[in-house]
Length: 90
Image (cartoon, rainbow, N blue to C red; front, side):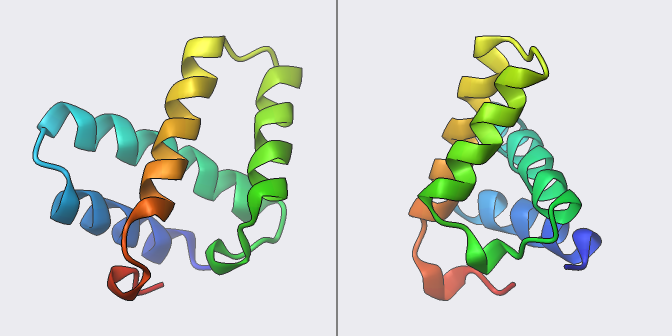
């Protein structure tokens, strides 16, 4: 996984679909954190299933991240994967 390319794709995706600058920034930040988790665990973005998202959530909880951070990151991840797949060029 080329983390830099994925981060560019994340930013491009949210720039395409999100009108609010505040939401774009929040979603990009949360999704970049998730991409770093994937990179650390040798997972590809196209391999993400619900179990990967749950493992990510469990890891955040085990590290003591606050619920607000966890919820915002999960919202970003779910939002990212809710967009039409033909626009995701990773």
